[in-house]
Image (cartoon, rainbow, N blue to C red):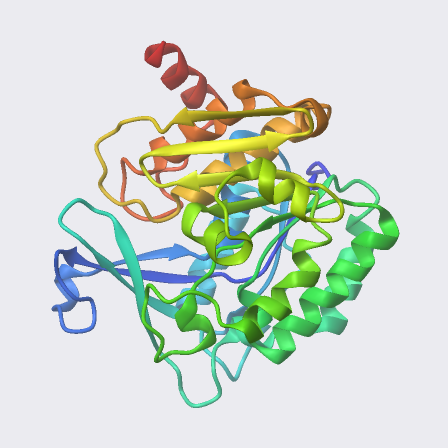
Length: 334
């Protein structure tokens, strides 16, 4: 029997349609685009499973070829799927991803909507409640992002999960993962969150034991990219990690804080690097829970290596490393 999941990842699973370097996925010929399974919580679950930490995915996929392919991939990775929902009316979401000449990505609009939205938007709260309850006794983390808050049904499902884990005293790891087009398809890819979105995010920010933000998200939400400032401004004083792409990562865990440069690696595609980073961090925290209070540069270094290794291949999931591959990369980087 598979080990009970230590991390439950709840939220979206979708396809990232990567356009050609410097091109546009909306107009490029199909043979110049690269469809890759993705979605932050699904990416984290797959990355954790590959690292060796048992993980569950709770989300909703369409009854379509993409949904079938994703179900197979999650099962092959060993991800626990009792919380996976399927939707006969709505397709799995396709996200259009533009890549610049260096491989760095930005998210555009979506493809595949048949008029009722996408499967991830219709995550059912009652089914989430039923799936989570038997998993919580062994769970050490619930990992979520803010994208489910952009749609009423998925927001209700996320809120139900947060209530359940609070009662079970399971901590929440929140990756802000602000993506404006999920909230407003007409929004500019670089737009910050409007006040209404921030208001919906605030209860999550005030419940999380671990908050991961990109530097620009930290500025938008807290007016600072200093993890210690962010930690002090939230009532529960969570562990905070602020990533800044290929530049650096800064953290504040309890009394421990620091900054380290990102690993310099050739970038094929940076999609999913942040998700691999978070998976690496949760992998470390599951094996060494004391790090949440004591902090550890070693845990951040391990997580950073996970993110760097994902940049070396296309898509968010295929290049995810094993624990041994991360350790080998770290040993070679000394």
